[in-house]
Image 1 (tube, rainbow, N blue to C red):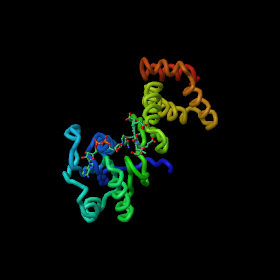
Image 2: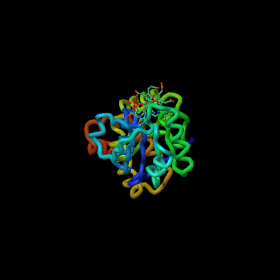
Image 3: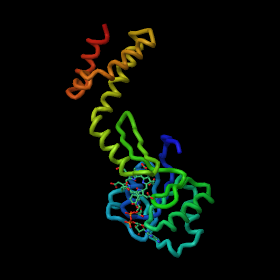
Image 4: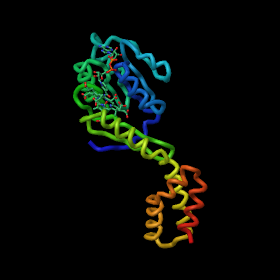
Amino acid sequence: MIPLIHDMNGKKVVIFGGGEVGFRKASFFYPESDIYVVSRTFYKKFNSINITAIEKELNDAEDNFFLDIINESFLVVAATSDQNLNNHIGRLSKKAGILFNNADGNTGDVMIPSVISGKNYMIAISTCGKSPGMSRYIRKSLEERFPDLDEMISLQSEVRELLKKKEPVQKRRNEILRNIIYDEKVWEELKRDWNSALIYIQEKYFR
Ligand SMILES: C[C@@]1(CC(=O)O)c2cc3[nH]c(cc4nc(cc5[nH]c(cc(n2)[C@H]1CCC(=O)O)[C@@](C)(CC(=O)O)[C@@H]5CCC(=O)O)C(CC(=O)O)=C4CCC(=O)O)c(CCC(=O)O)c3CC(=O)O
Ligand SMILES: NC(=O)C1=CN([C@@H]2O[C@H](COP(=O)(O)OP(=O)(O)OC[C@H]3O[C@@H](n4cnc5c(N)ncnc54)[C@H](O)[C@@H]3O)[C@@H](O)[C@H]2O)C=CC1
């Protein structure tokens, strides 16, 4: 498997299973996608997000029920507590030519990663199904280790543009940007304030 960052805006996503896991998967795609959740029961937190809920016992549902509901969707997620049912939904999605993610059962075409994101970046973490708990741990560790990523990226972006005007040699621009990233004092100034970090950079690197 390889990672892709995908525009899910307005895409139809159908989730089977309305438990805590189904809710987490729905939250993952919310609010970007158009989300349908099909289940016999719904976890209480579903009240907090805007999805289309379809109450249905799936044990006695015909294949055509599934095929009608997943029609024209971009992705199907199986998150019921019944592996056989999840795998069956996977086979039907394949038949319909729709991407499939399985929260419990045979791995589908797509896996859902742990995500850290800000205004200026996103990082997705996966252990390829080996240890989702470790993905969560890595996410938490990165969040603690890099609380100022957004600020640093916007600072780099600003300095990059300033440098393009001031420094004609690309290799030199590259070197300065790298030195700034590794300059602990810049990170310290950033904690105080974005502008004081920029002033420090201009005094030290723009002479
Ligand atoms: C394969 C995958 C399928 C998929 O859903 O795409 C899958 C499968 C399974 N997870 C299970 C358990 C747990 N999942 C988590 C947490 C997350 N699980 C997520 C993704 C994935 N989980 C995909 C692989 C991604 C990868 O490898 O990185 C995350 C990243 C994204 C999300 O769900 O939003 C989210 C963290 C979000 C965050 O916080 O950052 C925790 C931790 C916790 O809840 O504290 C536990 C308990 C501890 C543990 O088991 O490690 C079980 C039951 C195992 C059993 O029966 O014992 C299965 C089924 C199986 O393994 O067969
Ligand atoms: N991929 C992941 O990240 C994780 C997956 N899991 C696994 O995912 C599965 C779901 O976990 P939870 O949401 O905690 O379980 P849960 O039991 O709280 O929720 C299951 C949902 O599926 C629905 N459902 C089950 N059978 C159905 C049927 N025949 N017809 C209609 N609806 C049906 C239930 O009504 C319920 O809403 C479990 O098997 C669990 O082991 C657990 C943790 C993380």
